[in-house]
Amino acid sequence: MEPRYHNGDIIFVDPDISAAQGSDVIVRLENSNEATFKQLVVEGSRRYLKPLNPRFPVIEITTRRAWSVW
Image (cartoon, rainbow, N blue to C red; front, side, top):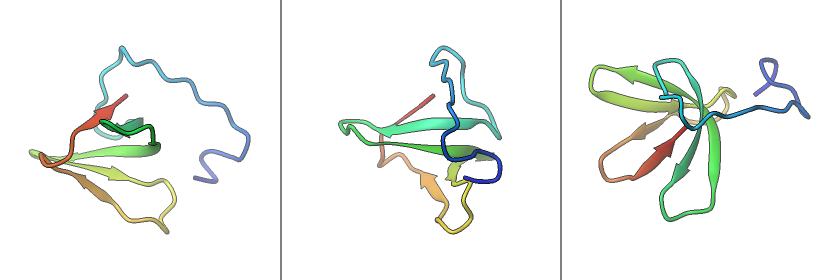
């Protein structure tokens, strides 16, 4: 996620704030203990999780997946 975030940086998350287009978010697949840090991209009715590292793929949030976004 460099250069925007650097190794060792600390991020703070407020789960009471709604995620909006362009927000950096913590996302967890429900029923899983794994989480990821991505940018939320909203295009019409479609939502995507864009990694800040361009070497990783963009993930579309679909109705088949139950995501928690903070």
